[in-house]
Image 1 (tube, helix red, strand yellow):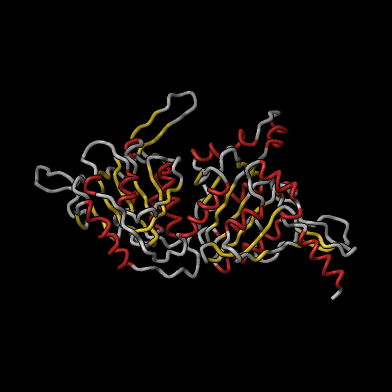
Image 2 (image 1 turned 135 degrees about the horizontal axis):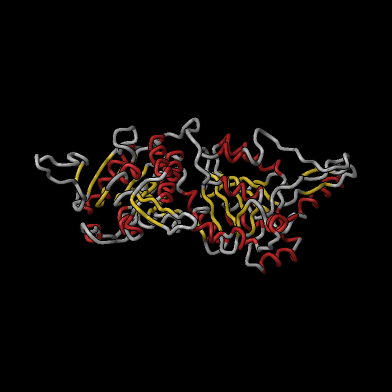
Length: 475
């Protein structure tokens, strides 16, 4: 082969490395950010990365044209295959060509590999000059998916993790919104229309974070986790993916006296302490902690087995389930079911509430239901993974059904336990006991973990499904 061609190709590939653009790297580090390649290097296991698509085209003059706007790799995280893709905000504003991502989404679908996307930028763009044609290529996708229909097909089949650590608008925001797990950093922003579009439409100039800040999304449920910086975001992505294969690991029991922690029949307490007292030490990973705070959703391990934990939080609104908490339940049930995680529900709620905030009227909160309260019932009806439940105290109204499914459907808990402080009914004038035989057993709190571990072991690990059951709501 022509030595000149080989050298030209090597130079084109080398031009993409951080080492040959120190000024740009220094500028990125000056903002306390990582370059696109540094992000992927920190995410993937050492010496596991295989780059896809570093060269985009070749001109009629024989010049190799490097890909612009981002980098794409396949590698491993914790020895498990993962696709990793990062936009590069310093290169054409991070404007991705759509073809490469579609190719990788197809690969993820075929292999059921997780995908991690770093998506800060202003949207997609044309990929590169089509050699000899004198115009810009707008097609070029390879395989069955584009970058917009790939994520919906992957939803409920292979995990998609998105990390936003800067402005993310238009197509980039779409990718973030399609993800199962969305991580962001302070000062970042996620929105379909950026500041120039808003200024053109409304004549008002806003900074990206003022328009669609991640801090706002954290409270409204638009993101799953807000972390300090990109290093913390990468650590969170790795931790989330560690639950995916549901391999049985060595689980250390927590050094907690649950009998002492268990609540009396009245008063408030922090359900997080109960969750930590049941799950393996250091294994609890809470999702959406600032959204619908009367409900906890966590990934964790019990006896080394991955589980999804749903728990009412009496510290906030006494653990009542409003429309946001109901939506939070529904999406979490969908996520756990589609990735074959057994579930644990810790129930202590006075019931459902409707939060009315109508313009021109005083905000009111009252017992009642909204259409959002139906979503958990539907999600549980679709659920095929087993759910174990513990009634800590109350489960009034429809709250127990929203947490565990309706007791007459296929979603009935595989094990239904209660603690001594539970409301188990009362004697009426005919000496009948309400909720008689409502539980499989009433146990002391200290017995709970051992009982759950045994049943989880009996249920065993499910084989991965051969086809998708359902998607996961994008909110």
